[in-house]
Structures are given as C-alpha cells and as structure tokens.
Image (cartoon, rainbow, N blue to C red; front, side, top):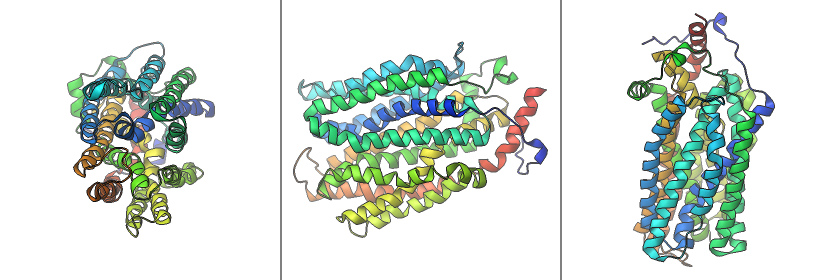
Length: 460
C-alpha cells in the first residue's frame, strides 16, 4: 500500500489528452436521453402508479425499494462485465450501442399499465419496473465509466462533467416542467404513455450518437490493466478499502434519497398543500436555477478552487432551503424562495458527481496497483439506486401511513402531515448529512501527485 503524499512538486505535472468540444457535446447529448428516463421514472412513476394506474401507495413503496435493491446488486455485476468487455469499440462504448433500443422500449411499457385487475397490475408493475432498471443499469454504468475512460486530465474531466451536467439539467427540466402538463392535456393513461414514448425514442437516438462520436483513451497503455483481469473478490476488497470511494458512495445514497424526495414528493405538495398541481412545473424550474447560473462560472471556479470546495459551499447553502419553507408552509412565494435556495444542493450532483467518482478510480489504481473503472462506477451507482429506491419507498410508505387516497380532492390531516414531512423535514436532515460527507472528501489536493505517479508507472 502506498503512502499518501500531500505536496505536489511542479515537475510532477503530467500532460494528458483531453476530448474536443464536439466529442464532449455528443457525450453530454447521450446523457440527455439517459436522464430523461431516470427523471421520468424517479419523479412521476410513484404518482402514475397511485393516481393514474390505481395501485395503493403502500404497495408502490415496497415495489420501489425491492426493485431498486435488486437493481443495485446487479450494478456490481454490470461493472465487472464492463471491466471485462473486449471489443474493437472499447470497454464502455459498445454498451451504448447495444442497450439504447431496449431501454426505450422498456420505458414505454413501464407507463402502459393495463386494466387487468389489482393483482395483475401489481405483477405487471413489478415485471416492467425491474426490466427498466436492469436495462437502465446496462447503459448507465457504461456511460458513467466512459467519462473516466475519455480522459484522466483533471480539468478536462471536470469540463466533461459540466457538459454532462448541462444536458442532465436540460433533460431533467424538460421532464419535470412538461411531463405533467402534456400528460394531463392528452388525458388519462394515454397521456403518460405518450410522454414515455417521447423519452423512449430520444434515448434510442442519443445513445447511438454518443457511441458514434466518443473515444476511449485511458488504460490503453496500462501494464496492470493488460496483464490480467482483476478477480472480483480482489477488486471488491480494494474498493471497500478505498476511503474516498466509500465517501462518494455514501454521498450518492444520501443525495439520491434527497433528490427522490424533492422531486417525487413535490407534486403531492403543490397539489394538496399549495392547492395547485401546476405549481410543480414552476418549482421544478426554480430548483435548477442555481445550477443554470453556475454553468457560466463552473469551469473557471473549478480550476481555481477545485470541485470539492465548491461542492461543499453550495451544499451548506442548500441546507437553508427547507428552513425557509418552514416560515409558512402554505405560502407559494416562500415555498418557491426556499426551492431556489435548496437548489444549491443539486449543484454537486449535476456538475461534479461523476467526475469525483471517477477520480476515486485513479486513487484506487495508485493505492493498489490495478484499475477497476467499471466496478468503481457500478458500486457508486448502487448507492444512487439505493438512494432513489429508499426515497421512493419513503414516499409510498409514509403516504400509506398517513392514509393517503390517490386522486382524492382532499386528504386527511395525517396524510397532509406526511406530505410535509416528505418535502420539508426529511430533506433538511439529508441536506445536513450531504454537507458533512462532502467536508470529508479531500482527494482534490492529492490528485495531481496520483496522476504523476501513475504516469511514471506506465512509462517504466
């Protein structure tokens, strides 16, 4: 095991290849399609099941957690599969080509629950939801892994993540602002099937464009990578002794639980606390306002202050969002003001998360002598899936605990209290944990030395 060095000498700076603008745009465009599906499922599937398909909230909550936990386990297998993939297109890129069409079709099936009785609907929901998240895993992990394989240069990787963040935000806003109005305008189950079809076709097209226009550069000259395939047992042992990966994975659990609550429970809040479901689109736009502004300054600020320092500051700011909402729970202006402030907590997820996760792969290679980029991303993805599943489960379970009745004009005081807990109190606690974890991540200072040492090993 190699001792960590905190000081980096100027002579250790390594020049590595960075993707061009066109390549970064096409990679980000591919992520646009992936995030359309992720956002549609994460934001509206619970509402679709309870208020459109007519499945009880308690059943939906259990489905969300069971399916996500199962999916999280398969993430590890997918990461290992990516690390062992050998093709003329590389390790990660071919999966973008293979999985785009299956994900598009599965998304359409997900939002097409037929009228086949209560038991039939539940079985259909389990089968199609598990299918979607399995196929999603088979494309999302290669996408995240590809980011780390396109360049090792820290600023280049940060800029690539910013490109990804721009398209992530555009995809998220497109779904969160337009999905509910479009589905309502068309009406009933058909409206949601049409929205899902739009997302499905989009992922088919954008995944192909990303496959065609990107290039894997990292690892081609690594002796450790070319000697032999790292056994899963050894790879997992190294992974769970990689402290920065552990921090980022736990951060993913907390962050995606928080995101699931803010987005998935938001429509219930605007409908039953603020009195108008249409407010959800406005709140969704304002939630991303800090990120939209941040994109204009992200590259320069990252170069000057580092990813971690910026992420920590905005995470602390985001804590005050739920606190502001507590001033008056039924005031739309106060709710929207709190939403803007709360949006600062999304900045690290949109702009830096995938770059920081991939940085932990370099740390692992430097520390243990071998590289498992796919395993690193799949295990971190497990944290995202667990967080999203936990957030969705909490929505279903707490609504059921409060006696929530889908599509009712009014809810019981207990159900209303649970909606407030899901939107205010739980997000507040999670935002505090988010900031604490980011304060523990200190890899940015060490990264230049890590990159220099890895470069020396390759040229020996």
